[in-house]
Length: 291
Image (cartoon, rainbow, N blue to C red; front, side, top):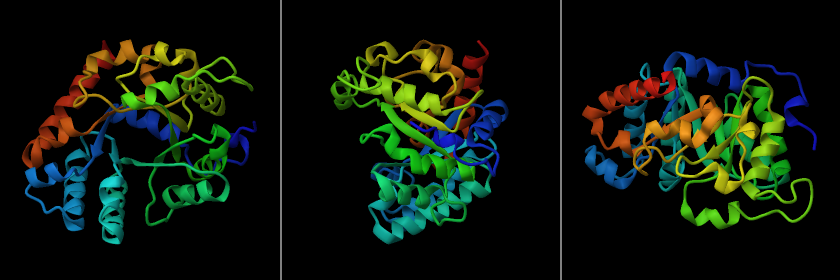
């Protein structure tokens, strides 16, 4: 399959290069912006579009200068309809204006012009929902997301393709063995990882994968070598029970490519405690990577 990363000249600094720069200056921590109703209540905010807007802006303020990446969970904003999207637009703009890398956790996926339109919504410079990267599903095949991958490359943006997710319901499907084609004999997860990695260039590409911290790569048939040039978005730390000290044992030689996503373990500290928890987690991760 044609490599979408080679289809047009790069007009902007690549997402992979920006990610590497953030790793070196502010570390690998990604702060989730997940305004669960119970968190809104704990923060003294209304369960409304205005509440999630205030919540998101406060998380952005607490993160800026302490960590370099945020990941708004789009679903928590969508449930308020157009007012929720307006709130999300404000949060995305504030985060990008603060110099943060913004990963929209949208998990979109389709084929043809439909998936291209999803990419245009989230990755086009100047779009109301403009983000630096988005999560995306390739259930219809990795080739089905070539259009948003090309769009990402043209605008200095990124994608994170669901590959080995941390929810237990996914295990059977993601570890199923492919019966025919280029990746016959490999698991679904392994085929996604290998194909995405083939799109990327040294040292770090702009199309990444989502691999949960709760999984074991061997169980999914994923080889560390297939992650050599691929950014990894890693949910599952903190609230799901995985400590930062497990980073190297989970991801091995690919650990340096990992974006460590932490949401509720940070957000449950509340508006007065969030800054301190971000500082503490950033320091903990720095020690893990220095070891």
